[in-house]
Image (cartoon, rainbow, N blue to C red; front, side, top):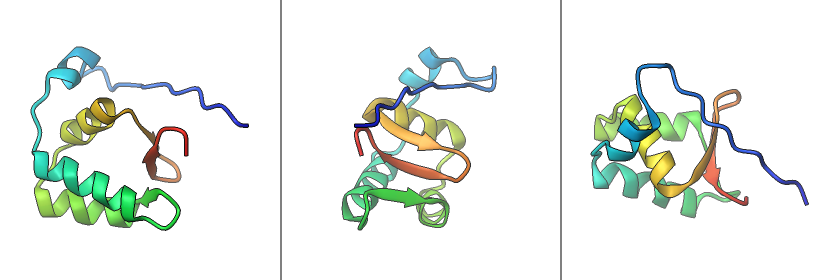
Length: 86
């Protein structure tokens, strides 16, 4: 079994505490989680994410806050979002 060692890097503008307190659209969160649940392999790639982001006018902070709240795993290159443990 491969174990993941999650690490969160910030850009120095957004602290973990601020992201944990950041209010975001519940509809954006629901759309991301539904897309992950309905994905064939449990992964959400850039194109799907971008469509959801654009539909909900989500910000970068919104995205990071959803990741933290739901303990999701995200990789930038290649862009992949998934549930922890998948």
